[in-house]
Amino acid sequence: MTNSATTPSAAPRAGGSRRQAIVAAAQRLSISCGYSGFTVEDLASAVGVSRRTLFNHVTSKEEAVLGVLPVLTDEQAETLRSGGPTGDLFEDLLITTLQCLRADEGNLDDWQQLHHVIERNPELVIRVKTHVDELAEEIVTHLSTRDGVDPTRARMALNLVAGIVQRSVEEIITDPASGPLRQRIQANLTLAREILTARA
Image 1 (cartoon, rainbow, N blue to C red):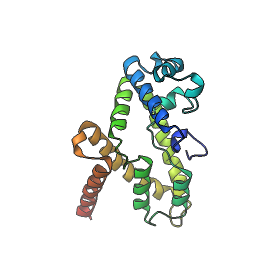
Image 2: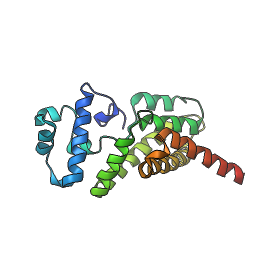
Image 3: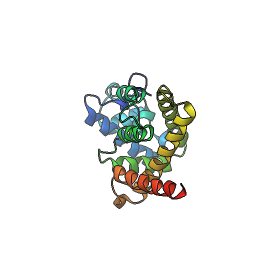
Image 4: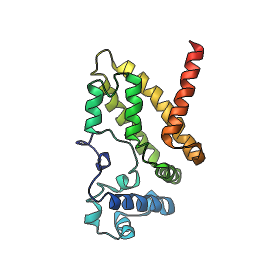
């Protein structure tokens, strides 16, 4: 799921604001009409562009609706393979995850909107799970090229980070006042370390 092999959401395009408008419209239609209740033509009309222009910004209706999903860039993948960004497996995974989630962009509204879309369209859960599973396997593959890191160790580290991130996303969706995503992740990471230290 690096830039060269997957969706255009992996890297900003020219006309990013148009892409954002397409994703926003697709998600509104998914909530009001259901994922199966509108066509690509309906989406193009809602945005005020032609079908051809629409596909200059997204590759499919599904991508338009799930445009907020995290991806791993080629640069991030190379950094992980080469032992970066810090040399510590857990910290590197956490930093990369925050980058993939665009945690510093203040995109709480994006996560809440995606949550509403999936609640309205439970058939999209499998698509999201497939995307996340593929991303996880890609990350494990990159990490396993590092000295001293085998797939089992890589998966364990990734599962720990994923658990903290999942809990943090759930918290900001349920209670937006709980803080930005990065802040919640750091707070939950501190809590997890306290729990693990107490059992040592």
